[in-house]
Image (tube, rainbow, N blue to C red; front, top):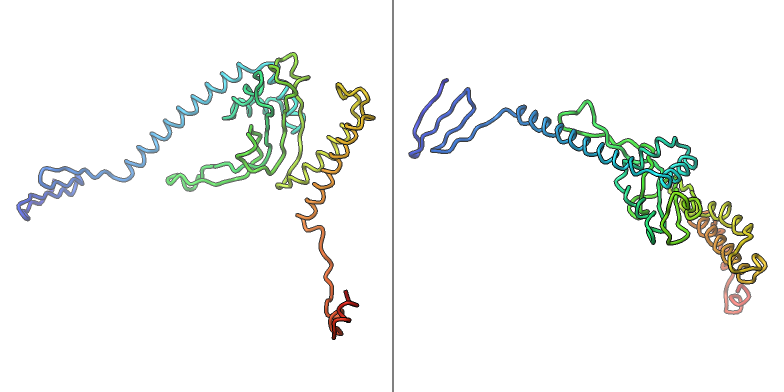
Length: 273
């Protein structure tokens, strides 16, 4: 090893051209090649990913073991409505971070609604040409996921389940106690999707309803008729609001000059008015 020694200000400094070590007084600093640090971080990252994947697999299998008739009912409705394979839907559900919301929905006096969004989601993918810096590409991909409905932008299809009572949801009563529905809001057209859902599904179903519970007269009852009228009125207001937002209603431009050019005195203004 070639080393050079010299004294400066009472300190002994040593420079080693082979070891890459610097000694100042009694302190030692070792300089490692950058590639060694990068390789170490990559190894640690790889081990962490393997451990996370192992934990995720265990969690999925535990959830798969919990699947019963209630879950099968939800899965079959989602598969039919969104046109996916039931196996795909099952894998999506047991992999979802919000899986516990399903159990909260089934519980006595549990959640009143359970929402699923099916829409484009940006997926992070590793850029093979830039592996050293871990850069990623964001690519849109269709994904089904559980949501509370308040944290993600709604840009696709919403599938929802609604409870009709506070009873515990079981495999034997799930088809009677839980209602399923969908509405499409592709490209974020929420008002249009809601308008279609009400006009084509909800209102026709209400107007064909024969059993109104304690109201024996059914559709002949004045309160029922008033309720249906208010729903129709709400739909009209919704449609009008949507058209206004979409600039479907535009005020006609009027040439004011032809009306005001000959106004000379108060009587002219009165006549013009």
